[in-house]
Length: 390
Figure 1 (cartoon, rainbow, N blue to C red):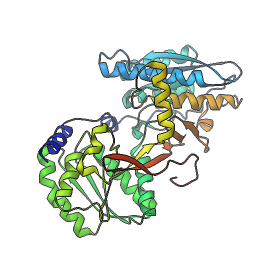
Figure 2 (cartoon, rainbow, N blue to C red):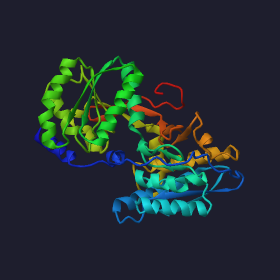
Figure 3 (tube, rainbow, N blue to C red):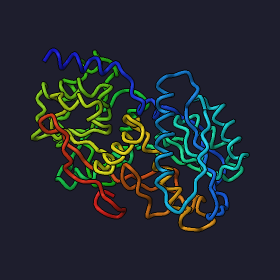
């Protein structure tokens, strides 16, 4: 008990990349982002913007992994020639705008990256007037639209997937539990929209201060509210690097039984892998990329580069795969907004995905559950659009 709670308290002190990215709020890029006309029989220049040069070791690792994944994807293309050109942003909006303009001046027909929302927004603004689209690795939907697309996993996509699954399992009345910050409030709103779309009722929502003592103080009242509301599921916005471990453990200790009240989460509950042994997470539902396709990518990346890819490296592969599929069609408008948002979507290393007209994305996710300290897929990821899960 003491060791588990201690680990949970340590986790609460950390900040996740996912959430910090969601907090950023940037201006909407200008322009309609139609896209250039290209010669599909020739070599297509593609710019890849990565956060190399920031002086941060984590950014250097991330940048290297994105470049490796993109090059792996280029090597896998058949019948399409991509000239991949890498530009360093140093993780700074000003430099991202500068190198985006440089890339287009040097012939780039589309831009992959950057990672961080403010940099992606700056890059999009810099090249919008030239009709160049930006496939950013951000998950911040605030910057989506115009010529900027976000390829990262979004709260809304995950919330929709889990709400639809919960409805099919007969869970009809959910309680939303979220931390008091901008990121988790965005998560709360995404869950509320997803519940409405899936035909679920929201029994209520409860918040807590994002601190160890804040969670401890809030849990008894939240647990009491859940019980009195008749909620048969609780949807958490927090992740394993934040409040989730201590929050779920204390919820169990306050009488919430997994047999009657299903726990589910907006973030991955299996990262880090040690999290799956936490008692409060047992029985919980969360969404994951297509495990089969993801495992294949992990294996091929390790064979090529001698190590594991960064968790978001697959986005670079997906971007190249989408560009390659469009160029292979032979249409000169292959990189326009209309082509990028084709309803059939694309197949990437994390499963099927498509870019939406509003600049966000939709991904085919599996539903997983932690059972006996193991992750089990209880509803597989769809392999095409229009099926279960969409």
